[in-house]
Length: 295
Image (cartoon, rainbow, N blue to C red):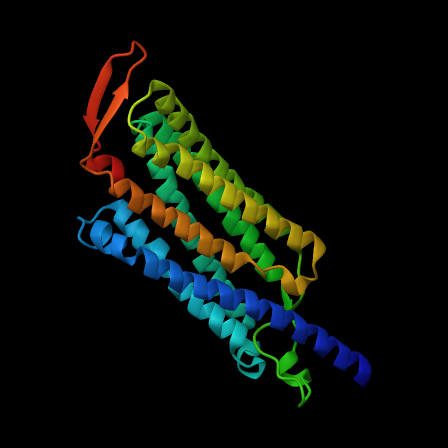
């Protein structure tokens, strides 16, 4: 590669890194903002609560995001001369955190869906089998995708007048990443469908609307946001250069965590409240939202 071609390639990488850094900076800012506005509710409904599987999953989901954010900052904003030799390792660690965080968030939502179906044993076993298969597929796909990545040697090729930071992808097999997003969308669709069916049934029976919004509206909002972000990621994969393949991955995870954590906080808000419903004969029924439902 002659000097002119090399300089043009470096300028192209610089432009890619500049756009990526803007998106990542916005995502990290969103993490901090979301944490601050939900801190009061977290202190009230999580910090002082008894330990349970949902509590553990909540902490893993919420606080692994900060670890992921530190990795994003390091990978995006530190000089290429420092990070280039570690790009693959950083990406694999980030991928492991992404899969773990996604799985914990999906497990929270699946357990809520299972709870509103009365913790039916057959449904629980079915969900466990389906989710285990999907998670295994996600792990395989993301591992193969990361193995296909090739990074630009910007550390030795950069010009004195060009200040490059982070890791720059120049080649990858996007098919594995496409499969990954489709699998995640499938998980979201299954959980949302279960919540919506139960929510619609409860709505038709009538009664006070607070809990119904948690079952129906929150499930619908969650699916719309996550399906939308997955579609955006797929569009970017098919239409942008390799350097942008992971452009909105962290942003998607931030939104994912934000929505999943809100499901925990909002359902725990209803613990101990009285709920009034009407059965199919029109008789009024009253029951209390127990901690077994929300924890």
